[in-house]
Length: 197
Image: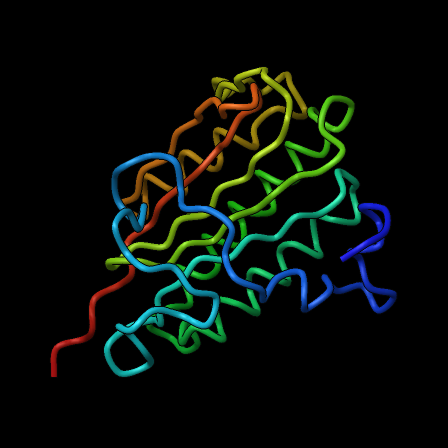
């Protein structure tokens, strides 16, 4: 797609469908839960999974301009993709809610703190091997830290919230440097098991 980074945002307030449904560009960088290493990656989903046996697997990238309007656009695009992969219904409600909160906090953090050095923020969603991983990459080398709970501060709790939600869901999260000098903040959450019949 040509044009400025802002051209990715459609007039009706949604990410351009072509931008989010093309072939995936890269695998997550780190081994561990939900990383998808060694698996074929396709935007339409992998060979396993589906509503009966769990979500359809795959990997998607959502590049957006580092602007406040990109936070809800990315959250909605990720929500739509999760639902399209079979994560609708009561079984997945808490997982989807947690993932959307994490995406909102991570994209908001990147837009707020990294926009000067990173005109684009890339969110990646991976569904693989019983895990869902979301990561947000920007070009700022500063490694954020989850702040301790300080009641005198009105902000700065986003990463602490991400860490808390991730751990309560039985997941893992971390921050890594990219080869280009930026960073990726990611969280992997387990897919809930099928209920006993």
